[in-house]
Amino acid sequence: MAIGGIIDHDGARNRGSAVRRWLNLAVLACAVVPVVAGVGVEPARAEYPDRIVKIVVPFAAGGGTDIIARTTAQEIQTDLGKAVIIENKPGAGTIIGTQTVATSEPDGYSLLMATFAHAVNPSLYNKLPFDPHKDFAAVSLIARSFNIVVVNPLSKINSISDLIAEAKANPGKLNFGTFGTGTSAHLAGELFNAMAKVKMTAVPYKGAAPAISDLLGGQIDVMFTTVASAASLVAAGQLRALAVTSAERSTAFPQLPTVAEAGVLGYAAESWYGLYAPARTPAPVIARLNQAVAKAVQSGGFKKLEANEGLIMVGARRNSSIAMSGRKRSVGASWSRTRTSRCNRAIEGGVPITHRSVAVTLTNCSLTTARQP
Image 1: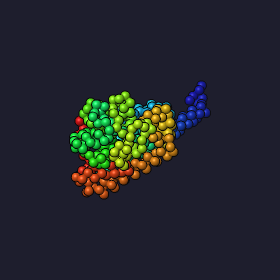
Image 2: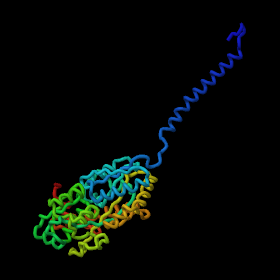
Image 3: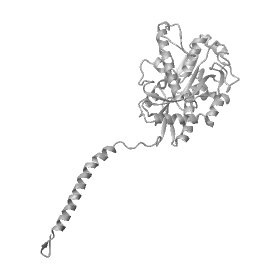
Image 4: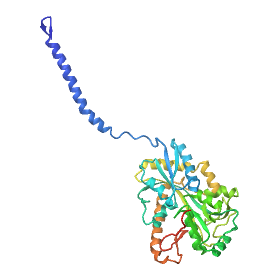
C-alpha cells in the first residue's frame, strides 16, 4: 500500500502473514471438527436411572402379582430417586406382558414382574415368541409364596372334604378360576384334581381380580388363588378360606389347615415372585436394581405383606438374582424332561406330571381348560 507516495512493504507483509495464519487456523479447524464430531457420536452415559422406570405385570390389576409389583415399585423408587410405574399387560397365560419386556431396550427402564409361570410356560407351549432363558436377565428373586383355597361365603362347601365330595358327586361340573394356563392357581388346581382323584374344570382369566370377581358373583365355584389377592377379602368375610396349599401351616393363617392335613395326603404347591430385565441389560444396572430390591423387601410395606399374607421374603439375601436364574432353569428343565418322558402315558388316564410339589394332569399331552368367560 502507498503512503505519501511510499509503498509500505512491511505492512503488506504483516497483513499477508496474518491472513495466512487465519487461513491455516481455519483449515485446521475444518480438519479437527469431524474428529471431534466422531468422538461425540456416543454421548456420555447418564447415571442410572435418569428417567421413569416401568415394571410390566403380565396380569390384570388388583391380583397378587400386581400387589407385589406395586409394593416393589413404591419402595425401590425411593432408593432409585426416580418414579417407578406399573403397566398391566394381561393375557395368554402371561405371554403378552412377558413378550413386551423381552423386546424392550435392554437399558433397565422396562422390567418384568414374573411368577412361576415364567419357568413353566416353555413346557406347556410348543412355541413361545421369546426364550425365557436367553431373552431375560434375572434382577432379583423377591419372595416365595403359597396359595389359599377359597370359595364364596354362600357356598355349601365349608371344607376340603366338602369340596372333594361335591367334585366327586358332580364330575366336571365344578369350575375353578385361574390366572391363565401354567399359573400357580392353575397348577395348584390341577394338582388337587390329580391327587384327590376328582375332575374340576379350569376357567382361565387375565388375572386374579377378574377371577375373584366371578367367584364373588357365583360364576365359578372355587379358586386356588394367591394369598395377596385374597387375604383382605377373607378377613372381611367376603370369601371363605378352606386351606392353604403349603406343606406346613402358615403363621399368617394359623387357623387354616393345609390341603394335606384336610385330606389330600402329600399335597403341597408353592410359587414365587421375581423381577427380570431384558437380556443384555448392563451389569451395573442389574446390580443397582438388585440393591434397591434388597432394601425394599426390608421395608415396612413388605414386612406387612410378610406378616399378613405369609410371604417368605428372599430379595434381601445375597446373590438372589443368581438364585432366581438357577431356580427358573431347574424348574423349566424338570418340567420339560417330565413332560417328554410321560407324555405317551398321560392319554386318558389323568397321570399327574409333577415338578417338586406341583403337578399337571395331561390329556393328549396338553393341558385342558375351559374357555375364558
